[in-house]
Image 1 (cartoon, protein in one colour):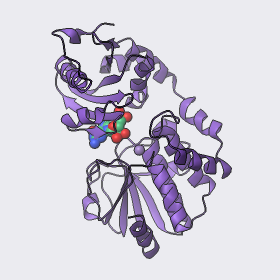
Image 2: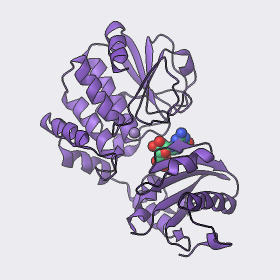
Image 3: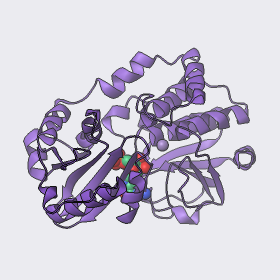
Image 4: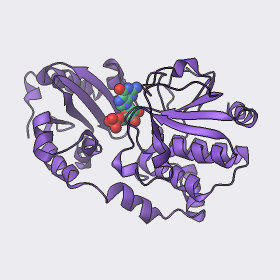
Amino acid sequence: MLSQVVELIESKKHFCITSHIRPDGDSLGSSLALYWTLKSLDKDVQVLMRDNVPHAYSELPGAKDVLRVSSVPDGYDAAFVIECSDIDRPGLLNLDKQFVVNIDHHSTTALFGQINWIDSTASAVGEMIYNLCKALGVSVNQQIAECVYTALLTDTGSFHFSNTTERTFKIASELVRKGVKPAHISQALFYSYPYSKIKMLGLALSTLKRDDTGRVAWLTTTSDLMAEADATEEDLDGIVNYPLAVGEIEVVAFFKEISPGVFRISLRSKGQVNVAKVAEKFGGGGHRNASGCTIKGELSKISEQVVSHLQETLGIQPLNGSLNGKS
Ligand code: 5GP
Ligand code: MN
């Protein structure tokens, strides 16, 4: 499938690139790495996204060139769809009318493209774009290198997660040789937060609860708490990971009220525990150790349902009333 992608790029001229709503480091890093790759081949290319580029990624090369649209304009030879489980994930009208190239590293992705290039051994789609770059004979410039490095760093949790492989380090090393300054990228990603993010972290952590076994934890934020911290939805990113720092906590759910009665839920786990399966039960998806879904309803009911599914995944028999949680 890599060869089909190479052939398409070599034979066509006008391309657009898109990725999922609320883009993250891999979706933006990979999209922009592909953007710079196509630009160095003198192609006509645009990155189209429904949502804005989060503050943490605003310094990525090309971030300012990302066009916010609700519909894909006509006239492209092909649309690259990066890191999406299905054709609706970018949230763009008219995308299904394009010649679609689906590039992803999730094994569960739907084969919605005319070309589907899926590599579930890649730690990030960034790795795949790096390989594509090589296959096209494009030399990795500073822009491509910074974008791919950002994708690798974020999707591997700063090289902490189990998707980190020898190949990840090999590519990272090559990128540093091409001019990436790891400290500079980490500074932009992890040491440039707005104050509201840390304030929000404190408020959210103060809601932390765990079940009787201590293995399942959950935390919540409401619009009131967000107003107290003067926080945006973007400030909530990453908070779900903190409870996993506790030795015995194996899974975490973070319930985020994004509008009255609508909760976006982030799930995280350690090791073999598969939270993608739980998210899928509620119409969402993701990876084994990081997944998400959106549920409408009353918080107490939603949290009870999600927490019992998480307990089931761990083989824990839920006790009556145990979901009040201990703090
Ligand atoms: P987050 O908790 O950071 O929002 O999402 C973690 C991961 O779960 C994302 O990288 C994405 O793969 C997946 N994910 C989150 N929400 C959804 C959703 O609504 N649908 C699908 N298919 N995947 C999701
Ligand atoms: Mn990814």
